Image (cartoon, rainbow, N blue to C red; front, side, top):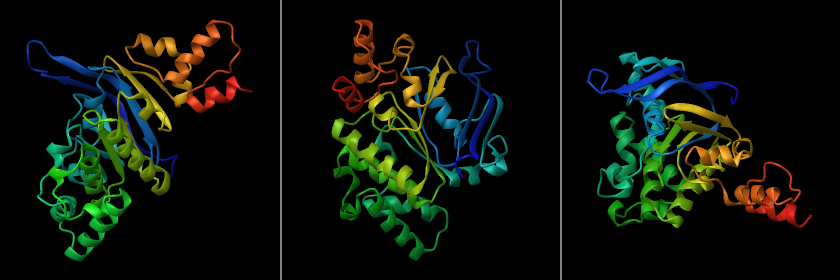
Length: 279
Protein backbone atom coordinates (compact mmCIF):
# COMPACT_ATOMS: atom_id res chain seq x y z
CA UNK A 1 0.00 0.00 0.00
CA UNK A 2 1.34 3.40 -0.97
CA UNK A 3 0.16 4.93 2.30
CA UNK A 4 2.24 2.52 4.38
CA UNK A 5 5.69 3.83 5.42
CA UNK A 6 8.32 1.30 4.41
CA UNK A 7 11.41 3.43 5.10
CA UNK A 8 11.52 5.65 8.17
CA UNK A 9 14.36 7.78 9.50
CA UNK A 10 13.79 9.30 12.94
CA UNK A 11 16.19 12.11 13.87
CA UNK A 12 19.13 10.38 12.18
CA UNK A 13 22.55 11.95 12.54
CA UNK A 14 25.64 10.40 10.98
CA UNK A 15 29.13 11.52 11.93
CA UNK A 16 32.19 10.25 10.10
CA UNK A 17 35.20 9.91 12.38
CA UNK A 18 33.17 10.56 15.51
CA UNK A 19 36.18 9.66 17.64
CA UNK A 20 38.62 11.76 15.60
CA UNK A 21 39.85 15.25 16.31
CA UNK A 22 37.96 16.62 13.30
CA UNK A 23 34.69 14.64 12.90
CA UNK A 24 32.38 15.35 9.94
CA UNK A 25 28.62 15.50 10.45
CA UNK A 26 27.26 14.21 7.11
CA UNK A 27 23.63 13.92 8.27
CA UNK A 28 22.15 16.28 10.83
CA UNK A 29 18.90 15.24 12.55
CA UNK A 30 17.20 13.81 9.44
CA UNK A 31 13.59 12.64 9.70
CA UNK A 32 12.01 11.12 6.60
CA UNK A 33 9.31 8.60 5.70
CA UNK A 34 9.01 6.86 2.34
CA UNK A 35 5.90 4.84 1.67
CA UNK A 36 5.61 1.49 -0.05
CA UNK A 37 5.49 2.02 -3.82
CA UNK A 38 6.79 5.59 -3.82
CA UNK A 39 9.36 6.85 -6.33
CA UNK A 40 11.48 9.40 -4.45
CA UNK A 41 14.38 11.32 -5.97
CA UNK A 42 16.99 12.71 -3.59
CA UNK A 43 18.78 15.81 -4.88
CA UNK A 44 21.65 17.81 -3.50
CA UNK A 45 24.98 19.36 -4.35
CA UNK A 46 28.21 17.49 -3.68
CA UNK A 47 28.67 17.05 0.06
CA UNK A 48 24.98 17.50 0.85
CA UNK A 49 24.72 14.05 2.46
CA UNK A 50 22.57 12.31 -0.15
CA UNK A 51 24.90 9.31 -0.64
CA UNK A 52 25.33 8.94 3.11
CA UNK A 53 21.54 8.88 3.39
CA UNK A 54 21.33 6.19 0.69
CA UNK A 55 23.74 3.92 2.53
CA UNK A 56 21.58 3.99 5.64
CA UNK A 57 18.69 2.45 3.74
CA UNK A 58 20.14 -1.05 3.72
CA UNK A 59 22.38 -0.75 6.76
CA UNK A 60 25.66 -0.18 4.92
CA UNK A 61 25.97 2.74 7.35
CA UNK A 62 24.39 2.99 10.78
CA UNK A 63 23.12 6.12 12.55
CA UNK A 64 25.40 7.81 15.03
CA UNK A 65 22.20 9.11 16.62
CA UNK A 66 18.56 8.32 15.92
CA UNK A 67 17.00 5.31 14.22
CA UNK A 68 16.50 4.04 10.67
CA UNK A 69 13.80 1.40 10.26
CA UNK A 70 13.13 -0.58 7.08
CA UNK A 71 9.88 -2.51 6.98
CA UNK A 72 9.68 -2.05 10.74
CA UNK A 73 13.21 -3.41 11.32
CA UNK A 74 15.77 -1.19 13.05
CA UNK A 75 19.14 -1.13 11.28
CA UNK A 76 20.87 -0.84 14.68
CA UNK A 77 19.74 -4.38 15.48
CA UNK A 78 22.43 -6.77 14.10
CA UNK A 79 19.89 -9.61 13.94
CA UNK A 80 17.77 -7.63 11.46
CA UNK A 81 20.43 -6.55 8.96
CA UNK A 82 20.30 -9.63 6.75
CA UNK A 83 16.51 -9.27 6.47
CA UNK A 84 16.90 -5.57 5.66
CA UNK A 85 19.39 -6.30 2.87
CA UNK A 86 17.01 -8.89 1.46
CA UNK A 87 14.34 -6.17 1.35
CA UNK A 88 16.47 -3.32 -0.04
CA UNK A 89 18.98 -3.68 -2.86
CA UNK A 90 21.40 -1.02 -4.08
CA UNK A 91 22.88 0.08 -7.39
CA UNK A 92 25.93 2.36 -7.24
CA UNK A 93 27.66 4.89 -9.49
CA UNK A 94 30.27 2.70 -11.16
CA UNK A 95 28.71 -0.34 -12.85
CA UNK A 96 32.10 -2.04 -13.23
CA UNK A 97 32.42 -2.27 -9.44
CA UNK A 98 29.21 -4.32 -9.24
CA UNK A 99 29.98 -6.98 -11.85
CA UNK A 100 31.21 -10.23 -10.32
CA UNK A 101 30.82 -12.85 -13.07
CA UNK A 102 32.10 -13.43 -16.60
CA UNK A 103 28.61 -13.92 -18.09
CA UNK A 104 25.55 -11.68 -17.69
CA UNK A 105 23.15 -14.38 -16.51
CA UNK A 106 25.70 -15.62 -13.95
CA UNK A 107 26.08 -12.09 -12.63
CA UNK A 108 22.33 -11.71 -12.18
CA UNK A 109 22.20 -15.12 -10.46
CA UNK A 110 24.89 -14.21 -7.93
CA UNK A 111 22.55 -12.65 -5.34
CA UNK A 112 19.87 -15.39 -5.35
CA UNK A 113 22.58 -18.07 -5.16
CA UNK A 114 23.93 -16.47 -2.00
CA UNK A 115 20.43 -16.53 -0.54
CA UNK A 116 20.27 -20.30 -1.10
CA UNK A 117 17.45 -20.14 -3.65
CA UNK A 118 16.89 -23.48 -5.50
CA UNK A 119 18.56 -23.62 -8.96
CA UNK A 120 15.32 -23.89 -10.96
CA UNK A 121 13.89 -20.84 -9.17
CA UNK A 122 17.14 -18.93 -9.79
CA UNK A 123 16.94 -19.65 -13.53
CA UNK A 124 13.37 -18.35 -13.62
CA UNK A 125 14.26 -15.21 -11.64
CA UNK A 126 17.27 -14.46 -13.84
CA UNK A 127 15.27 -14.90 -17.03
CA UNK A 128 12.37 -12.75 -15.78
CA UNK A 129 14.69 -10.00 -14.45
CA UNK A 130 16.65 -9.75 -17.70
CA UNK A 131 13.41 -9.54 -19.71
CA UNK A 132 12.14 -6.74 -17.44
CA UNK A 133 15.21 -4.55 -18.04
CA UNK A 134 15.46 -5.38 -21.74
CA UNK A 135 18.71 -7.36 -21.47
CA UNK A 136 17.51 -10.92 -22.12
CA UNK A 137 19.23 -11.04 -25.53
CA UNK A 138 22.56 -10.35 -23.79
CA UNK A 139 22.28 -13.13 -21.23
CA UNK A 140 25.30 -15.04 -22.61
CA UNK A 141 27.47 -11.93 -23.13
CA UNK A 142 30.37 -10.78 -20.99
CA UNK A 143 29.26 -7.84 -18.81
CA UNK A 144 32.56 -6.08 -19.47
CA UNK A 145 31.73 -5.82 -23.18
CA UNK A 146 28.48 -3.97 -22.56
CA UNK A 147 27.90 -0.22 -22.62
CA UNK A 148 27.62 1.67 -19.34
CA UNK A 149 23.85 1.87 -19.54
CA UNK A 150 23.59 -1.85 -20.29
CA UNK A 151 25.86 -2.66 -17.32
CA UNK A 152 23.63 -0.68 -15.00
CA UNK A 153 20.58 -2.48 -16.35
CA UNK A 154 22.31 -5.77 -15.55
CA UNK A 155 22.97 -4.48 -12.02
CA UNK A 156 19.27 -3.59 -11.70
CA UNK A 157 18.36 -7.08 -12.97
CA UNK A 158 20.54 -8.55 -10.23
CA UNK A 159 18.57 -6.56 -7.66
CA UNK A 160 15.27 -7.71 -9.18
CA UNK A 161 16.35 -11.36 -9.12
CA UNK A 162 16.71 -11.07 -5.35
CA UNK A 163 13.05 -9.96 -5.28
CA UNK A 164 13.70 -7.08 -2.92
CA UNK A 165 10.87 -4.74 -2.00
CA UNK A 166 12.83 -1.55 -2.64
CA UNK A 167 15.61 -0.41 -4.94
CA UNK A 168 18.04 2.35 -3.93
CA UNK A 169 20.13 3.83 -6.73
CA UNK A 170 23.03 6.05 -5.72
CA UNK A 171 23.78 8.31 -8.71
CA UNK A 172 23.53 5.32 -11.09
CA UNK A 173 23.96 7.46 -14.21
CA UNK A 174 26.77 9.75 -13.02
CA UNK A 175 29.31 7.97 -15.25
CA UNK A 176 27.02 7.43 -18.24
CA UNK A 177 26.39 9.31 -21.47
CA UNK A 178 22.88 10.67 -22.24
CA UNK A 179 21.83 7.45 -23.98
CA UNK A 180 22.93 5.35 -21.02
CA UNK A 181 21.12 7.68 -18.60
CA UNK A 182 17.92 7.35 -20.62
CA UNK A 183 18.20 3.54 -20.63
CA UNK A 184 18.58 3.36 -16.86
CA UNK A 185 15.81 5.87 -16.12
CA UNK A 186 13.45 4.03 -18.48
CA UNK A 187 14.10 0.73 -16.71
CA UNK A 188 13.60 2.28 -13.27
CA UNK A 189 10.42 4.07 -14.34
CA UNK A 190 8.97 0.83 -15.68
CA UNK A 191 9.69 -1.00 -12.41
CA UNK A 192 7.86 1.70 -10.50
CA UNK A 193 4.90 2.19 -12.83
CA UNK A 194 4.26 -1.42 -13.83
CA UNK A 195 5.28 -3.26 -10.69
CA UNK A 196 4.89 -0.66 -7.94
CA UNK A 197 8.43 -1.08 -6.66
CA UNK A 198 9.63 1.38 -4.04
CA UNK A 199 12.40 3.48 -5.61
CA UNK A 200 14.87 5.84 -3.95
CA UNK A 201 16.88 7.54 -6.67
CA UNK A 202 19.91 9.66 -5.76
CA UNK A 203 20.82 12.03 -8.59
CA UNK A 204 21.98 15.49 -9.59
CA UNK A 205 20.33 15.36 -13.02
CA UNK A 206 17.12 17.41 -13.10
CA UNK A 207 15.56 15.44 -15.97
CA UNK A 208 15.85 12.32 -13.82
CA UNK A 209 14.48 13.95 -10.68
CA UNK A 210 11.31 15.20 -12.38
CA UNK A 211 10.38 11.62 -13.28
CA UNK A 212 9.84 10.87 -9.57
CA UNK A 213 6.62 11.21 -7.55
CA UNK A 214 8.47 13.25 -4.96
CA UNK A 215 11.75 15.10 -4.56
CA UNK A 216 13.74 15.41 -1.34
CA UNK A 217 16.33 18.18 -1.62
CA UNK A 218 19.29 18.08 0.76
CA UNK A 219 21.77 20.75 1.81
CA UNK A 220 24.59 20.42 4.33
CA UNK A 221 23.24 17.20 5.80
CA UNK A 222 19.65 18.34 6.19
CA UNK A 223 16.41 18.09 4.21
CA UNK A 224 15.50 21.60 3.12
CA UNK A 225 12.72 20.94 0.58
CA UNK A 226 10.35 17.97 0.28
CA UNK A 227 7.54 17.93 -2.25
CA UNK A 228 6.36 17.01 -5.73
CA UNK A 229 8.60 18.02 -8.66
CA UNK A 230 6.22 20.87 -9.50
CA UNK A 231 6.28 22.12 -5.92
CA UNK A 232 10.06 21.91 -5.59
CA UNK A 233 10.86 23.66 -8.85
CA UNK A 234 8.20 26.34 -8.50
CA UNK A 235 10.81 28.34 -6.58
CA UNK A 236 13.69 28.30 -9.04
CA UNK A 237 15.65 30.99 -7.19
CA UNK A 238 15.75 28.98 -3.98
CA UNK A 239 16.86 25.82 -5.76
CA UNK A 240 19.64 27.71 -7.55
CA UNK A 241 20.74 29.28 -4.27
CA UNK A 242 21.35 25.75 -2.99
CA UNK A 243 23.85 25.16 -5.79
CA UNK A 244 21.59 23.17 -8.12
CA UNK A 245 20.35 23.62 -11.63
CA UNK A 246 16.65 23.67 -12.42
CA UNK A 247 14.82 22.15 -15.40
CA UNK A 248 15.28 24.36 -18.45
CA UNK A 249 11.52 24.84 -18.95
CA UNK A 250 11.04 25.96 -15.34
CA UNK A 251 13.95 28.38 -15.59
CA UNK A 252 12.76 29.86 -18.89
CA UNK A 253 9.18 30.21 -17.60
CA UNK A 254 10.45 32.14 -14.56
CA UNK A 255 12.52 34.45 -16.78
CA UNK A 256 9.50 35.13 -18.99
CA UNK A 257 7.33 35.92 -15.95
CA UNK A 258 9.90 38.48 -14.81
CA UNK A 259 9.60 40.15 -18.21
CA UNK A 260 5.84 40.48 -17.76
CA UNK A 261 4.52 37.41 -19.55
CA UNK A 262 1.57 35.84 -17.77
CA UNK A 263 2.35 32.17 -17.33
CA UNK A 264 0.84 29.77 -14.78
CA UNK A 265 3.01 28.62 -11.87
CA UNK A 266 4.72 25.25 -11.67
CA UNK A 267 5.71 24.82 -15.30
CA UNK A 268 8.19 21.97 -15.29
CA UNK A 269 8.53 20.26 -18.67
CA UNK A 270 9.12 21.47 -22.22
CA UNK A 271 5.66 20.20 -23.17
CA UNK A 272 3.98 22.23 -20.41
CA UNK A 273 5.83 25.39 -21.42
CA UNK A 274 5.04 25.00 -25.13
CA UNK A 275 1.36 24.37 -24.37
CA UNK A 276 1.16 27.52 -22.21
CA UNK A 277 2.94 29.67 -24.79
CA UNK A 278 0.55 28.68 -27.57
CA UNK A 279 -2.72 28.74 -25.64
